[in-house]
Length: 132
Image (tube, rainbow, N blue to C red):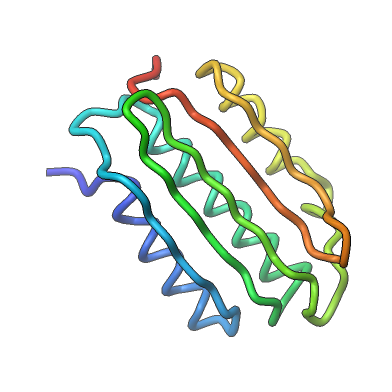
């Protein structure tokens, strides 16, 4: 059986910690049995955001929150901006732009940007059971 993408989020968090990034992970609610492509998109959002955190805010405290609702998954990844470089979100931004498109196709919401104090936050709301 395939590992749910959300289970693989824990692996991503562990890999990012081993690379020197302090990451807090919070998961709320239980993933529904079938989420269509929404859990994969949630995984990709976390993957891209953690990659950016390592690149642009290395050493900054980073938090990952995944919330499972009955009809949607919400993901938030943020850094506090205390790392080696201030966060310029995503270099070329192509990875994040691609994610925005994937979330839009599923009928969700996506935002990414700098926050006051020098960190950045990536948020996605992905309807569960969405079309692939």
